[in-house]
Length: 309
Image (tube, rainbow, N blue to C red; front, side):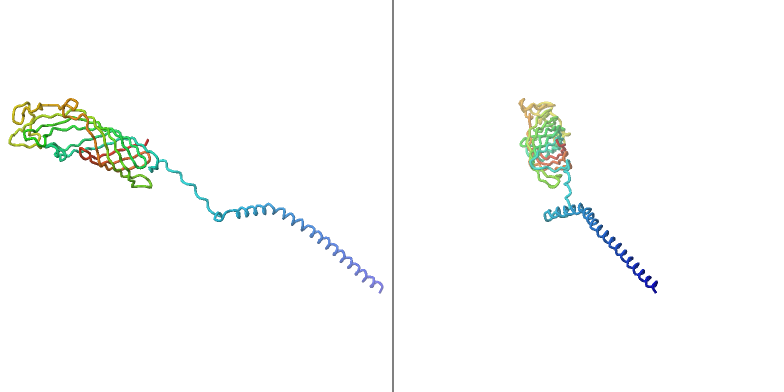
């Protein structure tokens, strides 16, 4: 009996000690876990501090932007201006040097306003040209060579009789010094490629060469046809009839100039009005122009091209 009782007490003691030991171990583990947790939280807080500061800075910068600036896309830089664009700016002077060509037409109908006979004449001119343009006003300075050579034709004064016909021919040349003043009407305001020009011109021509004139008589007296110069002959001298002694216009008579007391001009004026031109300027450095108009000698048509200076 004694042994059974002692065994029970021993078992109770062992159990009590085991429970105490378990409680002690549990307290130690809990204490360790509790002590380690604040340290981990502190380390986490230290690790998160730079990221938090960066986020706060970004949020502040976003809040500091004016309304409408947030998330607004940046504008693309402007495109560089084309240096070869033909557009001309106000207040700037543009100059071009080039060549011009013109065909001067002297119609017979115009000659017959002042005299009888004659024939239509085409006179070709060409030479250098200098153009200056600013704010739509263009000035063209030109030196032109003109060939007034003409085959023989019959000619007489408006009030002269049928026996006053003369055979006239020419080897005359002129050098014109002219100035055209033109106003521009743009047809292509955005790019400046096409324009109309309207205005006029003045100038003076210096005359060279010879003007031949001689009294003439019909090969068939009963047939007077001034349009058929081949049916006429030059008078060799004052032989009567169509060949009188009123002047010395016989054979290959060369008319003197004004300076020498004759009727051949030494200088000849140039006046054109109106003049209408069409200009095409594909690039800044090049322009071309078509010209048409009226002058004191008749109609003219022309073409010019210039390179920008």
